[in-house]
Amino acid sequence: MQARSLRSGNDATGCVVPHRKAAHQGIHLKHPARRSFLQLVLASMLLLQAPLAVQAHPNDAPPPNAVDLDALLKDAMEGTKTPALGALVMRDGAIAQQAVRGLRRSDGTDAVGADDAWLIGSTGKPMTVALIAKLVDRGVLSWDAPLATLLPDLADTMRPEYRSVTLVQLLSHRSGLPENIRDLKFLDTFFADTRPLPQQRLAFIAQALKDAPAAAPGTEFNYCNTGFLIAAVIAERTTGQDFEELMRREVFQPLAMASAGFGPTPAGQPLGHRGGKPVTTAPKVSDDGVPMMYTAAGNMHMSLADWARFCLDQLAGSQGRGKLLTPASYRLMQTAQPGSGSGLDWGVQDSIAGRQGPVLVHGGSDGNWLAWAVLFPNTNTGALVVANATEDMGGDKATKTVLGTLFPTLSPAK
Figure 1 (cartoon, rainbow, N blue to C red):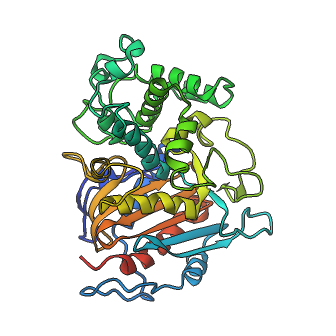
Figure 2: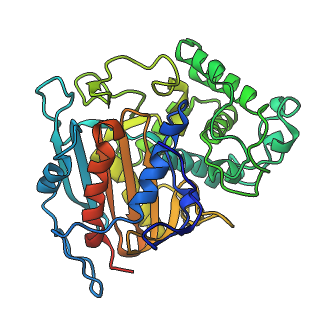
């Protein structure tokens, strides 16, 4: 699969596609074709038209609960080898619909359950931002402090271009850092690393900050996983606590996200799939997934309902009623940075698939799972869709079908 430009412009159908460059993608690391997969999925998702079974209502409010969600999942999976699919719809500050369908693993008979955990990939990045925002709200951190101040022991060894980079730039993909560390052999050593995760992350970012910039810091959007690991280390060094414990205390527990955890899903839960088979062992190299220390870049699992609890708080925050953060922090997260289609860390779009925005979007994948979060703040609606497989088993087609059908029920036509 060839990567293609994500710059704004007209596609072959003549449709205008805004902010393609800011399409938020997953964290799979090695193959360029797979790295570009989620860019391509989101770019095509922007052009989706709702299937004929769902009638658009161009001049009216979106029809509530207009879709039989279980039937939609069944139809979306047909013609694919996707083992399981889950979807959840949010309306008016609550979960309105939820459905799951399929098998926890393709070689078994156990059906997925409503409370099962799914790996949500980079759609966990906004949760990392929320954690950092809470520390800023509390006065522990500052959005505008430079890395040389936040990480003084690394100031001399990091490239001079990065010394003035801020948390806002790290978490909006404007730091200038490459998407991932350039030395993937070095990255592969972390799959067998037994040191505590904070030590691993510190060693990783010390090396990553020696990489040449992909762009001048602060000048343009350049999707970057490393920036989130740097932010995690900053939080750890400032508070003296592990990132994972901070996430539990500051985000998961206040929102009652009891199923949320880190790394692969627990035993007896759905498995990711690749090449037609369930992935039953932990990844050993970056071609297979991400190491455990990558938590802050999106290596999290949780139930659909717990994922929704976070997204519902984001929707509430857009209306001044959020629980986790100050109104200023919600605005910062959900507002595109100058010259960019990215907030912290939401893709921010004027519209999607012909529906009115603003729209907050994030997609995530480790190469074995595929997840999407799409929120419409003005209508207080949103959708979460996840599959335990990616494009090689039709997970992209299945999730795209679900989203394309749901969008007309979530926001009026543009």
